[in-house]
Length: 324
Image (cartoon, rainbow, N blue to C red; front, top):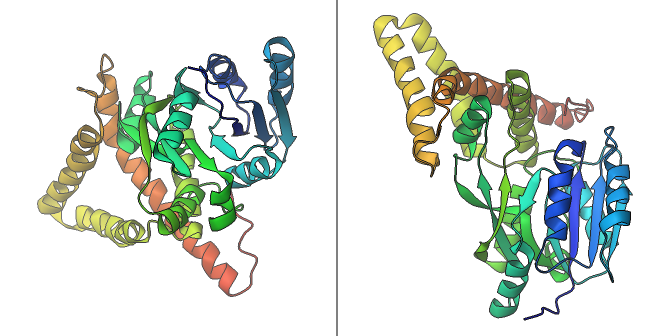
């Protein structure tokens, strides 16, 4: 049955050329295609805008449009905001570069919104990876094979933005948590369509990339004012853990070993749906032990940096000039 449900699809991107082809082909394969696609490019240096324009000239469909908004330096929330402002439709869906939707993803969202008569429907993202290091990162964060509701898989009526406002534009991470908090406060419990699924596999494949991502993410979560309880535990608990391990002799070493087992062995199993989460890559399980310790240190560093930035803002020292 055909679906009369005009949708604008907004996609913030930055240097996504490696995964762009997969996303574009998945958009064309949608059982219900968006009649407007808006990419918000934050300053790609890998030719993303040209690739998108060439794709649309070759494969674009009738009665639809595709455009690229150039927004150099824009954070993800600012990119989404720009797309919402430019959208001509009353319904707006989000997806991100690097994410691949199932062929019926958008149709499932639209039919769910019609059937339930709700202004917001969350789709779900399936998280997995291929290389051993990326598998370890996936398992330690979202969980390998886990499925979670996410904004870049979801559909919203324009009136939602009129009522709760835009995404915070200055944040690289945490902007989704701030906005989702406002959404829940105004509209109540999230409406989730588990049949509307996308997938994400592009986790960091090296130490430097992973550690920087963890540090910057937590820095911006501090600036966003989210996850404050967890940040307090890390801020005080991690230095205490290493102090005990250093001065506590055999007992201190036992405590540190228990931490590694809890965070690097049990926690990935708890988070993951795949059994075993490493699949045919058992090396990933061995990577997880040192990796979790390094990621926790990077997260602690991001918390400290974020607190420093907020203090600098308070005393008027221009603290927003930070590494992002």
